[in-house]
Amino acid sequence: MKTKTKIASRKSQIPRVLVNLPEASDERLDLDKRIKVLKTYKIYIDGKFPRSESGRYYKLKDSKGNHITNMSRASRKDFRNAVVAARNAVSSWSDRTGFNRGQIIYRIAEMLETRKAQFIWELVSQGISRENSVNEVNTAIDRLVYYAGWADKYQQIFSSVNPVNASYFNFSVPEPTGVVGIIAPEEFSFIGLISNIIPAILGGNTCVVLASESMPLTAISFAEVLQSSDVPAGVVNILTGFEKELVSHFSGHMDVNAIIYTRNDPAQIKAIQISATSNLKRIHIRKDQNWMSPESQNPYIILDNQEIKTIWHPIGF
Image (cartoon, rainbow, N blue to C red; front, side, top):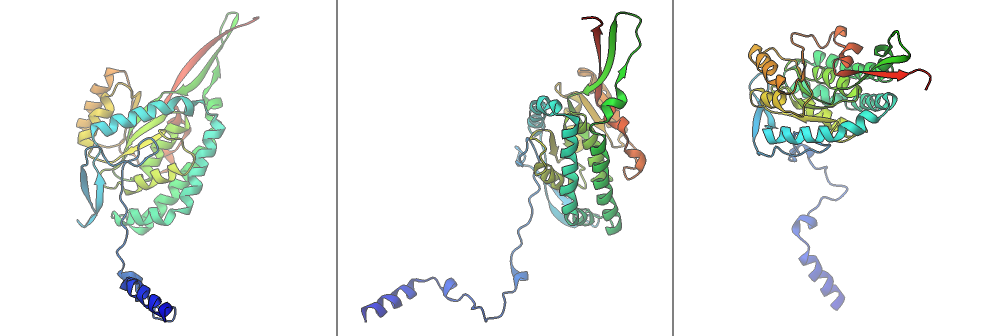
């Protein structure tokens, strides 16, 4: 009798939410009524996904004006943190063999292949047609494979033994420039992003990237792919935010060695050209380019961010 009383007492203490759980024979729960877990698109610095230190964000809308999500609005401090991470990663990344960097870039292609549906959905949600979205994602994967094949070959193509009339050998070899700032395209936001990041890191550089302001979703999802693809922390750092706020920091920072600008604002181009003289940055203006075109991939884009080192070696020693 006492045992039954104890059992009854314990049952009375069980929360009703547990008592009323459906049995296996009951009708299935309507899962469509659950509250979905929405993705938070953060910035990507040093292999991590912090929120902007300023706490600011902006509302991302599609072509019809519908609110999609909130995007982090990176600040000058975020940019400076990204440059520090990129600088710290230069030495170890550039010391890797070209073959190893090619393996890692091919791994990015493998990971992206398994997540095609997500990237297609993100492009479609930003107003790109499904057909164009599929073509853009497939082209991006193919481009990764293309550049992975060049990883251990561009050095031979662009190196040389120079003829000299003296008792020494003279060699010219390409070496990484260092930290590269990239202002990614507004249009072709995904394939344009990849077409500028991959040739830069393939050559042993690290980079800080400003993603498309109007279509940034795939940039942060691509950062997730990078994080799971053996790319060391700091090699690629991706910010989201406003071009008008951040471009001057890209061109004026003394620890950025080169800048790639892919948009069409003449005032910004002029400002970059003036500001970049502070530390003689290399400037590459890649405007009005169709990033889906085969002409937008070639080994000379790798060479853009290489310094040619000349070596003199005596004969007979």
